Length: 558
Image (cartoon, rainbow, N blue to C red; front, side, top):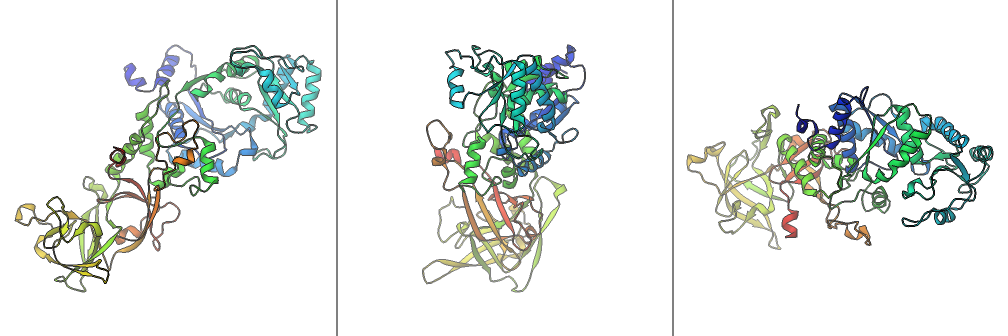
């Protein structure tokens, strides 16, 4: 296998391969996906999931799922459940049980005591404002806390009092004693324990002090025997602290941290704080709103796990930050659905055609392919009747030669059915067309184009008597600016007012009503749609538009 085969566009594969070849990886590769359960996962997390689980698959190792649950004030069981569901929907399964950083709280407490006994941690009483002042700046060193030289015995007593709930939140913290003049601010005596009188979703009221993320993360990796701790680039400056804890604590293993560039996509935001604001301020209808860049939202929109995994592979894993064009994600989704989504017909703005020379009570079952290139998707039955619906904009009383649909006095083919001739229109009192009367040629069912019948084009249709009514929801990009959260602006100002609309009274092939939720289709000549995961039923069919057949954004902005 060549180096290019091994690494592809993923530099971490090359690192791991080198570790294996040079004997630094004595056992199996062990990675982990460590989300904080304080929100739903988004497209950036999808990349991290695919990376960590994908590396484990590639090298025959294992990947753990660990919730880094150190802040009970912002964490919920609902988030934990959603995250597990998202990972499994993407097609991955973690090794062993679901793990929690809170599983190691007793051990982490012992580690903190070990640091105190070694004279490498102390209880500090500076207020948050004072601590910021003492910390210094990027160009000026910090100053030692006046509590830094307490004896280990005094610090142990104070830390025990913190644990016993004798102090209020914010009164005292435990800090690592490293170097207040370090160029890397993360090494300037970082906080490793805070008082938080909060009930924890896993440990209940056992603890009123909680370790910080920086103190928890590396030690949890070590306890689990993680070999390669893979983080996004914002943790690069934290790596020296990660390594300091590993070197100064009696941990059972020495994992190594590696950083990669996070996934940034234009026309979206991935800050959990901003995503939560969209939910809390009712800009969207929840974390799984199909416009949201959350995995749950993309699933409800009709994206496929295979397309998301392929997109993450196309993006690659690099060290340099960049912006990925939303069109790249949309292409991956559209390409997957084009190859795999069965075809169907839906009329969203119905105009009735009356075929006056077709038997009034006859229902003819016409066969149509489930997919033009997939024999395994079989054939579907289309009931054809005297009255059918077509799209209103597929008919004009007069039109030029560029209009390839139904025109009064001209012919058009109904897809997978007959050729019709439009003969007259019926209008209401306001002059609106309510019906088009046509005749059909019974010899044109499945006719060869060379038989002399030359209709102007092909349009889709649904039987007026046999079709089913449905609700169709049209979703588009949530933001109309490529950088909605650029500095100094309120990202909510760039919410696309046309990102969501509902079309009632659509007509669908009767078979679509009975499809299972999350079934995906190409509505011919319209776009790709999915039966809503939660609200679709045979009695009340509901479909969400996943994506249009072609990208229209570039043209709109040109």
